[in-house]
Image (cartoon, rainbow, N blue to C red; front, side):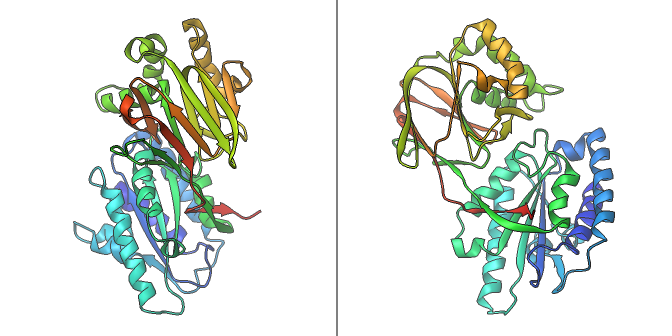
Length: 375
């Protein structure tokens, strides 16, 4: 019932959205029904109020010229009585399902172009879930041919627990991108490659990092469902105390480059390195790891008492002014390390072994079509 109510509201907003005027619009809502925005009563109540307000706000816009409706993919992938598909919403059934949906949408979009229609449909992908759902969908979108991606735009609604990769932290602010004048903007992607390529490459669309925070991510995911409350905050506390015992912090060599120029070359004990798609990015439920225009944070090893104080600094971004935190801009970073260490990509963790090094993290060109408000 919640998904049906949600989809009806989103559909009403889409039927009047001014994005890509003059083309028929086909929308698809990829929804994770187990995401906190649907399952936590207080959050659902807040989201429902925001959705209803956005529907009323959208009525100032006229109905779209050229029409707007649910995609054929949504209708065809409905495993029930067809009611959800008709509303354009597809509940995900587990890992990789979001990616399968985007693959099906790509086939639908490609078929529409082959018909040679003068005003071929434009496809709007609405992701209503957490960072994991978004990662799966955007990974498939990233691998589509560039020409095909020009017929898509994606909007990431904050329906998960952390929502650091969403287009806004509040649902009404995200939906404003469909109500107010907006344009398509292409965003970059983070790519982690290992030396042997037996693992990866791995993609991220918000933050890709190595070290202590990846351990927190790994343990949070491992214990998800069995620990009540915000287990991420709990594991931050545990990591501050015990991370060094589980993963020895040894000297790591890091070289970072920006536009081909080396901007830093260090060999030191590093607690974590976080590389963002841009600056002004958060992770771990809005921890301000990249609080300004710089997209890289390298945090040096420090005594336990200092680690405890740094936890609060991440809430405000004040760590950026401390000597233990090196902040810089880079579009490529190389890592040399001789010990196991965890990496995380938008909340998904992987263990890197000594044979995987050297590891590189690079920023791609602008490839992911998102909405950006005009003005």
